[in-house]
Image 1 (cartoon, helix red, strand yellow):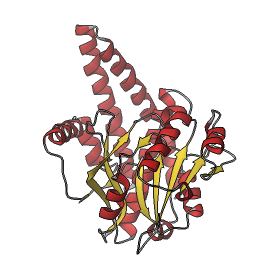
Image 2 (image 1 turned 90 degrees about the vertical axis):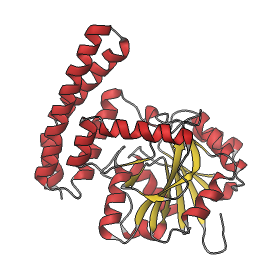
Image 3 (image 1 turned 60 degrees about the horizontal axis):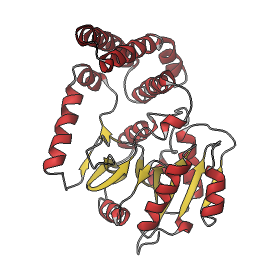
Amino acid sequence: MVHQEFTVGIAIISYNTCDLLRECIRSLESNGVSHNNIIVIDSCSTDNTVSMIKEKYPNIFIYLLKENKGYAYAVNKAAELLKTDYMLIINADTYFPENSIDSFINEAVQLKGGGVFGVQQVYVDNTWQRSYGLLPSITSTIFDGFFITFCVNRYRSLRFRISAKKKPFTVEYVDGAILLIKKNVFFELNGFDESFFFYGEEADFCARMQKKTIYKPYIIPSVHIIHHRGKSSQNVGGDNEFYLRNLTKGIIRCASGYCTYYEVKTIRALEIIFSYLKFLFFRILFFITRHSYFRRKVLYYSLVNNIWKEMSDFIDDVWKKK
């Protein structure tokens, strides 16, 4: 995509998302995006992704990774291949309404202090979806533990139905499903940290950007993009424990970039305490109601608690490698 003063390339990160990828590409077409401006980075899909691209979209370049090394690795490969000023990194489970890409890019490039830009993600029914957040810290852990984050997100969801925000605003990190990134900032920071496999790499990048450069992450709330949240990660492989373990490791790796060793250890201790308290809370509710929802929560927080208990050695390993 060539504008008067800059160029933008689009990279779709794909793994076993053939049907979603097809819909994503169709949405890009409806925005007037040429196939020559799109590349697909595929992490060894075993479905029909590769054949579908070659048959239906021969002008879209698909780069086949030799092994699935995670999201950060795929994004770094996309950055190498895209010879543009900006790169729009998107998951295959996103869908762009008409005119949304131009609106997003045109508004983002006016924010000279921005290095990473996101949009307001929505579900298929156009309801609010989490698109940004706080970086992992003792404070954010306490907010999560006391349901403060949950209440804030509920408020944002309700406010979105009444009157959505219009003006761009800075955040601590932008959700990785849709990222518009300045290429010079990306390379200045040596890209995404490939020690992250899945979850946390975008937060880590935003944290490093704010620490080492003058640039900040921005959300463009006037642009709404549909995100079928979880559809891409469901195809990575493994079960609930696989996702939670990667999420937990991502939190630890990210926090270790700007927190002290003892602060990271404190985050772990708080997570153990809060997950156990939530386990007890939902266990009581299940005992009273026998509702399956509460039983799922009991199992979930039991698993979270066990995973955090196992993370002491992992924290030590991360710090030894710093």
